[in-house]
Length: 119
Image (cartoon, rainbow, N blue to C red; front, side, top):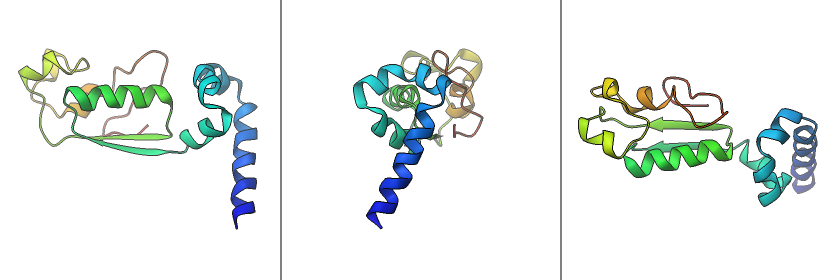
């Protein structure tokens, strides 16, 4: 059983190394973590509940690291006070759920998060 998992992981790692766009996009993380760790990271599913100042910063950093899926959940609408701590929310987002305001403006070069969360 363990040898099957190792073989599957080795195959996934091999496929990633053949993907030039992936290798270019995540070259720094691969250099720091190694390709095996990045292979695990790109298959990771992450849920972040609460998109206040800490939650949105955590979400940004996780998206930049490259997990397979990041789901953002917050049951409170964006407030005017959030403009000071949540750098993705703009004035026109006040009154709407934070993931709608957070999704369309991702950090450099990464695909946007679709409305409702996951990437």
